[in-house]
Image 1 (cartoon, rainbow, N blue to C red):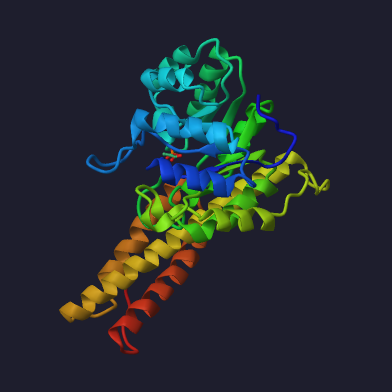
Image 2: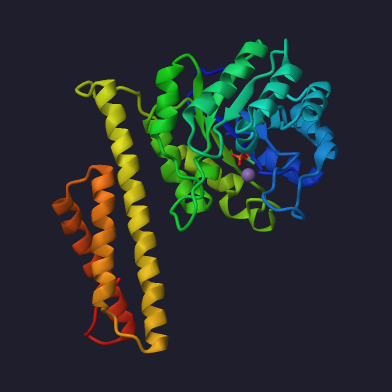
Length: 353
Ligand code: PEP
Ligand code: MN
């Protein structure tokens, strides 16, 4: 059983177990701050021929951490073979990765392999923003095991330019909490951020939303990490991040009903995505500006502007947005786009998007 009296419960450790030395030295350095030690043995990599984890070979290293450093250990399980090995080797807890949660067949087979055990299971959200699929995975594990089942928020994948590696979309974990209030909710700021400098603010936000714990990736030497190098913190940086976190009680602001608070969380999350999209659009303007410069084209092309206004007018009708409002917004966006392109062309003339 996990002791939830302390908030946040801290899970820390490298993305992947790489060598006995790396596993042991990272664990020793994290001993004072972590409640659980994580290290992935089987790594789900997007492309083949990348480092796919050390596999079974790392199980004795985790046991050594447990026995000599004294930290309970956990790793990812993605199939029944992993579950059998983990149970045989007395690993203390497991997590189900985002790429596995998307498949009800995979989750069910893991649930069947775990049936009757009381090992705590952390269920990461699926890669894409599907609250029901996440809830379904938690339910499948809950109905099989006798131990703690915890939901672990690691953000949602989206395509193109973006601030986060995986958009937090805070309304989704909040939605899970309102549908399953008895389930503890953790946040994984590392996989949301994708880069070190965002981890602190994501971790703080999750604490402000009253989440119960954190999973943060930490490597003794992040520069040489074989996976997720950009998002891993040194143990020292993780310790100072933890000391700087402000842990407030939830419901501090009694003037807000929880419905209003949830709606505001959703609104903030949409605004953040709007800003992300605008930033992506301005980057495209920069590329168009570069193209026009190289090819000696004028910045402003009237036919293109007319086409833009016409297609967006149709979109506003389809989406139920006041046409005049959209026209005003687009005019401002267009103006900024022209400013950027004109700057690139190095002249005070011209327009377009
Ligand atoms: C991980 O925790 O290292 C991992 C692979 O996570 P996710 O499933 O969230 O991508
Ligand atoms: Mn990782």
